[in-house]
Length: 330
Image (cartoon, rainbow, N blue to C red; front, side, top):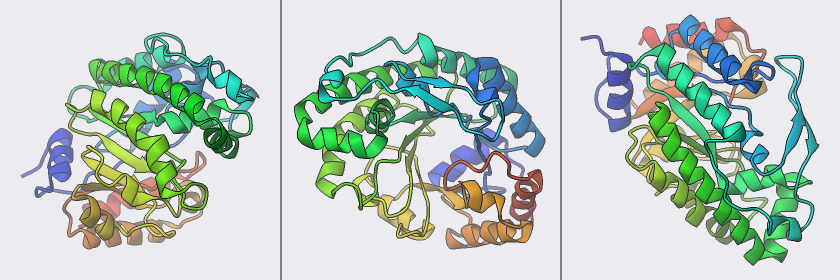
């Protein structure tokens, strides 16, 4: 019997039989994502064109850091990223000025408006998972010098950094609650500061866990929370017991396979397909092969097909259609 999209996604998250494995993609559109209406329209265009089972709207990556003073120059081209014009944190003293802010205002308020527009236009049946970055990842956007400089500050001024992360986590917990109220079915909770070659397991726990659980705890009642452990060589096991319904990561690249990740977490897997340039350079046959391999690896259960991370903005529509055709072919 055919399932609705919501039935299909919820069944997959629970490891129950599905009529077909849920499928979705996401990618940046570096011009459309700068307004609520633009993000909503582009999300709906892609979802309707390719009939995806769930939506993961691709908020602009800098929106969280904008709440504490990051500024940027928008791109005039869909596939060309923005340019940061001001990163507000240069030294530890700058971190001491980071305080909780109202998530219903500014860039996050704009994101909530986009979410409300998407939910109103797509209707109730399509699940929406909404992006929220970890406080540590937000901190890396705030610091001039990015991730490496942020970690250097964490090592030299740990108490100050903890205070900043607490303020960011409090704000994002409020934002998470607002997202659920606006129509999200859960958070796509992401961090790209997870690699074993940039921080130790102890550092990963110290700068992630307490703050992550504050944010995730605010969305605990949602059915579709996803932990996205971004990048190769990640401290995957440091996140494996997080209270989420599914995990997303780049299988391979010194990370667990899909089956191994499911075994370690006991939760559903969102993935199986390449991201960014690797997706754009693949052939339809490559994508079909990846779909079949992912379905076989988990025997069609505990699986939502999607990319390891966002796909290239210039990726051809035929690749999305190849994924759907391979999935539908069983």
